[in-house]
Image (tube, rainbow, N blue to C red; front, side, top):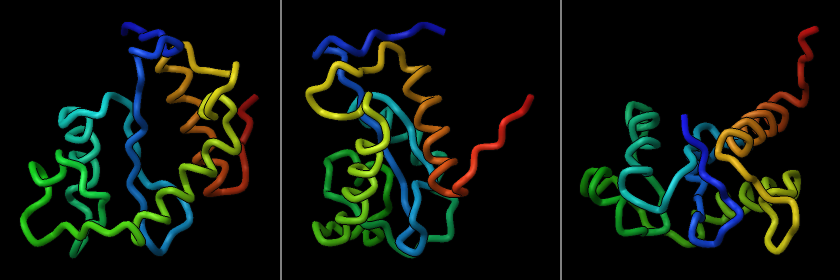
Length: 129
C-alpha cells in the first residue's frame, strides 16, 4: 500500500460520508478525491440499503449512480451532514482548518476516523490487552 502525503495543498483528500436521518452518527465513509471513482466506492457500500430516496447537495457525480427520481437536492437536508462534519473537526485536530495537526498518511486519517466514529456511536472504546 502506498501512502499519500497529505500536507501539500495539491494532495487534498475528501471524506465522503453517508448518514441516516434517524441516527446520530456516520454510517459509512470513504476517503479519497472529489471524483466519481471515490463516490463509487461509497455507493458500493450503501446502494443496497433500503432507501426510498437520497438527500444530497447536488454534486455533479451523484446522477451517475443514483437513479432518476431517487435524489433530492436539499440544502436544508444537508444540515445534518454539515453538523457531523463539524463534530469530526471538533474531535480530530487533523481535520481542522488552518492547523499544524494534519494527516501525513491516508492510513492514519482512516484509522483516526474509524476510532472516532466508533466512539461517538457507542460512547466506549474497548481496549484489548
